[in-house]
Amino acid sequence: MAARDRNTLTQNFVAQSPAMIEVMRCVDLYSRARTPLLLVGATGTGKTTLAELIHACSGRTGPFSPHTAGEFDRSLEQSQIFGHERGAFTGAVDRHVGVLEEAGDGTLLLDDSIICVGRPKLCCCVCSTAACFGVSTRVVTYRSGVE
Image (cartoon, rainbow, N blue to C red; front, side, top):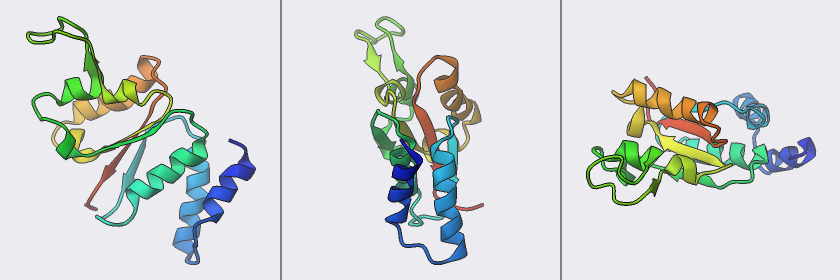
């Protein structure tokens, strides 16, 4: 996406405070990054909206795919996130595409309560999978509270 197009998207937001003007500057900067992002803020502060804006400004051709903790069964979440091959474990009768692969060339937004709280290894694995296995999905996690 051309810089002019990114600027048009961010200019549609009304920002008068210095803090919000800085946020819009960061949207432009981070939309060009190819690394995972972590958005932190209290409930209702617009983290999902911000992630969607970053995706829209990024020029990625795949979908914006947001997911929350309620969508995943704790005992199956690794398979739901990463997918699995037929026969990978008892009961895996078919190949299952996980949300990471499903997002394709887009942006995968994960509520960090899905993977990061109490499970840093899984969080690290999700964030590095895109880089290590050639999946071009950008992973964005967010925290609903500020510590």
